[in-house]
Image (cartoon, rainbow, N blue to C red; front, side, top):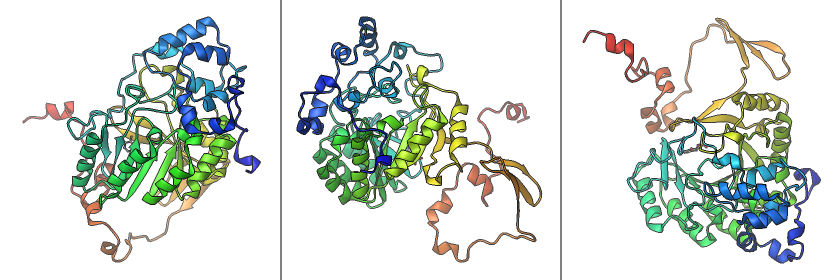
Length: 430
Ligand SMILES: *Cc1c(COP(=O)(O)O)cnc(C)c1O
């Protein structure tokens, strides 16, 4: 494989030096030999007794499991190795800040079916999430769904998945099914296939996507068998979760390329993490490596307000600064959207640098990434003309369901959106 496609060759920690490649490259071996005991981790990473004890204490909050592969990428001489920070628990996780929430995004509240809390989140009009397992190959220390992650190694019971599919069947507006967890690719291939097939058979479901960190934490799980299965259910998309260039090894790059060869468009969702990737040039290196492996950087998330991860949180401005360093400076499709997932179920809210400097009656003043300032002149004597015969080209349901700020822009009679219990309105004489 071309050298520019990965940051480094995957390493094997000397603790496993006697393991045969045949086993090392078998995901079943990797999962079976995950490091879950602080005492064993101590031996591998040469931790002090004190460090080991604090790890033990933080495990009450979110369990630890690290694949030998991912653990081997840790630089044991680097106290703040970005792989280590994501995999090894610290005492900071026991610190619950005043601004933290167990479920900051209201993923349980936004469940439309009684009894499916934690299985189904329906927030947006045309897409929803199904959580098919709470098991992961590796438990990320910055996990936003830590209230559930690792709760059980059992997949979501089939009856609940059937119930979720019933909801999708009767909700005709849902065209995009996001299969998440936990990590769906920790499921046995046949159970995963049964789930994908169930949703694929629903007529109005156009696309299915899977959210998985397995290409990063256990890339050997991406086998030919798995790809053969997945490619039967196109259009199928996968979003993965690389946070740092060091995670792009020859093996994780190969996993991405196998999925891309199966015709699966790949996206990447990073989380902005203090000490890990909160630097524009580290992110630039990451997105370049991703696109070299046919992975499109999709989102960079501001770290959520989940309990016990405040030590990972950064200033919001750091995310904007990263976009400033990317847009224009590198390929447009290497630039992700930076967003904050709104507290209480607000959904993803994009943030970016300001490129508009001023607006006049017919001109805009804009600045580019170099600092060049230019204007754009709008057409003179302009009247708006829509495309001809648009009825032929639009979905009539789309016309009925215009909400939010777009409703204020539309031809509807709505003239404003008013906050509940507005004091000014309460003052009005009845
Ligand atoms: C992120 C998310 C989606 C998918 O959003 P996209 O912007 O389409 O990727 C869907 N549902 C929920 C609840 C989400 O958090």
